[in-house]
Amino acid sequence: MDTIASLFSFITTPVSWVIVQFHSVYGAIFGPDTGWAWGLSIVSLVILIRICLIPLFVKQIKSTRAMQTLQPEMKKIQERYKNDKQRQSEEMMKLYKETGTNPLSSCLPILAQSPFFFALYHVLNSIATGDTIGVINQSLLQSAQKAHIVGAPLAAKFTDSSSKVEALGASLTDVRVVTAVMIVLMSASQFFTQRQLMTKNVDTTVKTPFMQQQKMLMYVFPVMFAVFGINFPVGVLVYWLTTNVWTMGQQMYVIRNNPTPGSKAQATYLERLHKHVAQHEKVGRRRDRAIVKAIVAKGRDRNEFERKFINGLSKAGLAAQPDGTVIKSESAAAAQAEDGTPTTAVGTPKRQQPKRQSKSQRQHGGAVGPKAAGENEPKTSLTKSGQADDKPSTAAKQGGPKPAGGARSKAQSGQRKGPQRPKSPSKK
Image (cartoon, rainbow, N blue to C red; front, side):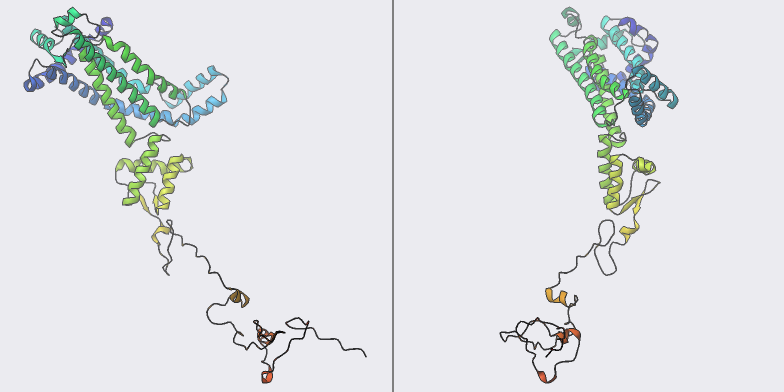
């Protein structure tokens, strides 16, 4: 490990200089020999490095998005050459080369931090052995050796012997408890960060080698940190735990505000955006407008969550525009008909169910209100028992003249009601 760290000795002077500058500030507040002064100096070094790596992180996000857009093509290659793994790998590499993507882009921030990590390890290891390094002179060296973080010296390791730990002014139990807790936190934060990426910000509908790589890293990195962490000084554990927490927070921000298309994070994001747009009838932030613009531009290529978002806007009487804004749709503008008929969410009038008519109304051709023509005619026909017939007379139905003198027509026994056929003349 010392041989590997010595390869990065060219950067140990800048790293030691940055730590000393932060120590001069925190030492004036907490005291130059305290663990707070040296520990916060290391934390500030991490923050400074991560700020400088933000452009690289943005490039990593863009590269990851490019990998996501290639997943349909990758799926086709897998299905076409599912029985020939070698040809499948060759076609995958050809696709990466043609599109300019790199499946290892997710490792770029870690690779970029490696020189600073090994340089810091080399600085802290020199403090433990009592050697000056970079701009850390003898007085600063003695001050760093006196610094303790929760009872553990800054340069102590989990694997140090009791005599070496006592020389640094601490007990072996305190050092091992502190380093064990920090190793567990470091591994857990790394696992949670990678798991968050896999479960929330990856399109799981397509199985690709990229996803297999991310799944492998989710388990490999925490194990690596746990195995190698026992050989890291306390100061290096502080550095790595801080950078893991920074990465976790940075990734949570990206997943919440710029999720991968087709992921669960995108579904959650579009639900929040739909509620906001439906309430305020506008897209406020520029980042949200850019996402709405991209969804509109996809057209029929939208995924399930994007189609649900567009349909939800339509039901709310809104329409997404190509520039990322939303306007009220024309159908929603006419929310009420001229006669006050209520409309649905999309502006179409509700269908009114016809009233049920009575039997007499159906017999008179559906007349409602005033009585149908001929209904006022006197009901003069009698039944056999002498009761008035409920039905109007045939003359009234046909609109003919009323019977003269009010004479009542008698129904013959066994004769059908209604108009009768004339009898043929009898033959005598």
